[in-house]
Image (cartoon, rainbow, N blue to C red; front, side):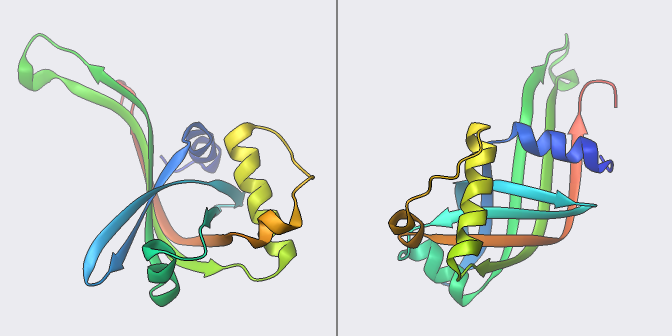
Length: 152
């Protein structure tokens, strides 16, 4: 899948992304709700986190991440066991996390998360809640999307 319109349509169907990182010398993967933006073929993801914990500590120490999303799941049945297949769409990409610092940056990221998760535009964010979380921005350096819909 290479058409950015198809890619953003697929991303819009996903509600959870998995963020992979290296923590204490081991691979660590966390499922997270997200928001996103696309400009041209550039994809940016926004995530939020508690201010303390393994995830945020790891990301501040080592910002390189892998993001994975998948959706459109379904079993394609067949007469023979090895002829079964699976419908899906997925994106895997890499980039660096940047912890947003200013209130305006954090607010923008949280608005994108809420827009994606709820389909609504919110402007009534309480400043104390914005300041109570970390907001993360990941601009993907590279990504690949694949899908199987039974015809490809």
